[in-house]
Image: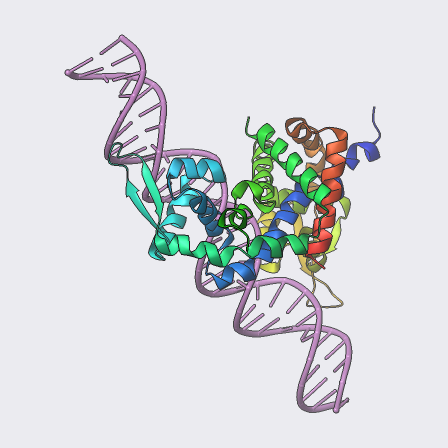
Length: 148
Length: 148
DNA sequence: TATAATTTAATTGTATACAATTGAATTTTT
DNA sequence: AAAAATTCAATTGTATACAATTAAATTATA
């Protein structure tokens, strides 16, 4: 029988993997905030635009899959971005269930102003290339394992 | 002058470090949900209890520092946990500004039911010991760098 | 082809998060 | 000691997140 002490070790905050990931993720997002404020976007709005800068037109379902967000989060978010004039939401003509999201010229234009952001964030993370690579690899493995 | 293509690479979703961290963090938390439901806790409530299982009594300020959460998040959360009877909130007698949080017997009792959780989560992450160690090291470095 | 099952987005309800402000208590400075 | 500055938690307002449900459209099946 394991001792109480041993059994408890796994419940210590600094032995968890999830907690530092949750905390680090939030702290990094906080670092984005001042840069995103300059272009009047929140972090979640920014990752939507990241997708649209790669792919001008995408269905809401596919967008949700790429960002791991559901319609409960995306619908109001996309409505806001549409009001800002950064994208257009329209039902597919061939299948009325599908909502097609298309970046507007204004939305695409925002890309230029965003180019400096990744480097700035990278600077403040201050990881070695090897660490960044390792981290990226492990995170992708986790995402694969946790989403089947 | 770098080509458009080269300049754009840094804005691709799958070249970001923050996004997979943000997504992985959420997916892991989602894995916790069924286990936490058994003891009627949310993830944020769970990490508060993790701290209290280590340290029965703690000031709200110190709790916020450990969890990277501010009073806007903690106040309503702690009120809920107090209503559930898992902790008690009381002003420090020597300094009325300070809110002292103390786990109740019921709150401490929840620890036993939680012991299986970390192992279950570990199983579904399915990382090698080396990967888990690397990840932990890098996340701690990031937290250190992003919070000065 | 009528019905059942599935897909998709919207809605509802609950629970964070956090910036910014407020206000009370304490400490520091003058 | 009185005034100014600081600390701390609570409050306010905005923006996610996500489970669960609903409803419309489409596809599969009997």
